[in-house]
Image: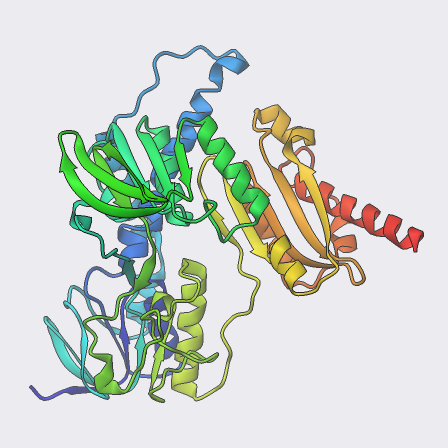
Length: 469
C-alpha cells in the first residue's frame, strides 16, 4: 500500500497525544492522530475519570456515616454496585460530551483514526496499523501511554490489574492488593469503603514510599484504623495459586513461608511504557533500562525526527504532566524550537481516605540537598473548618529554606489535601516567600487555613532563629 504523506503523526490519543496533535495542527502541520482504542485513551475511558467517580462514592459513604453526629436520622446505608457503575459510565459520557477537545481537534483539521489497532513503525518515517492507512510523516510524536507492570512469579496470571478491579460488576468480599504506591493505596481505600476486606502488601518498609515519611506513616495508621490490613516489608512472593475462596498468595519472609487468600488479588506493582509492539528499532528510537522511551529535556528521542510525551517516557505518569509534555513535544517537533519540558513544581495527590498530596521536596530530600531546612506543621485538629466538619485527622507540613524564605515543599494529609496543595504549588510557582504566603488573608473557616497556619508558624520560627543568632 502506498503511504499517505502527512506532516506529523501522533501515536496515541490520551492526554499527551491529544495535546500533541492539537498543538501540531495549530502550528500549521498536516497532522494525523492514530489510536489503538477510543479517543481520549485510558485516562478518559477507564482511568482517572471513572476511578474518581468511585472515589467520590466512597467519600459520600464516609459523609453519610457521620450524619447521626449532626442529628440527621438515616436508615441502613449500602452500596448498589451496579447503579454505581452505571453512574461511572454516565460521568464518562457526560465528560466527553462537554469536553471541547474533540471538536477542537476536528476543527483544527486533524485526521483521527480511532480503533486502529496497534500502531508500529514500518520504517524510520512510516507508521502502520491494523485498521488505518499507512502514513509517512516528517515528524512523529510517540504518546502510546503505559500499562500495568507484571511480575515474573508463578501464577501471576491469576491476578487482576487495577483497571480490572475498577471494572468489576460487584465489590468482592475480600481482596489482596500487592503494591502500595499511589494506585495500590487508592484501590485499597475505595474497596475498603465499599465493605471489602482488604489486605495491602508492600515489599518496602513503608507504603506510598514517594511521599514524605510523616505522610506515609499517617496514611498507614489511618488505613489500619479503617480495617485494612497493612503489611509492610512483607518479604517476597513465591507464587499465586487458585484456592476455594478465589486466589491464594504464598509469600516468604526470612525463610518462613506464609499465605493469604481472597476472592481477588490485584497487582498494583507499577506502570510501564507501552512500547512492545511499536518496533522502535526501525526508527532508531532507543529505550532506557526501564523500557521507557529515552528523551532529552526537549522530549526528542535518539532519532532526531521522533519525539515522545507522556507515560512512554517514564517520567511523572500523570495527566497534567502528559498534557504539558504533548504540547512541548509538538512545539519542538513542528517549529524546530528548543522549549524544555516543565520544571519540578508538579503537585501530586490521591483521593484516598484520608487524602494526601505533595508538591516540591520532601523533608528527607531537602536535607540531603544540604538545605538548612525549617519544617513547620499546621494540624487539622487545631483548625476550625476540620473541627466543624468532623475531619480532624491530618496536617500540612511546609519545608522552608530559612535564609531566603523559599518554600521548598508542601505535604498535606487530610480532607481537601489535594486542593490545599494546589494553593502551595501556585505560591511556589509564583516565587512567593513563606512570609508573603503567611500575609495572605484567607477566608474563614476553610481548609486552606491549615496552610496559612503552617506558613505563619514558619515565619515566627524563622524570626526566633534570627533573634537567637
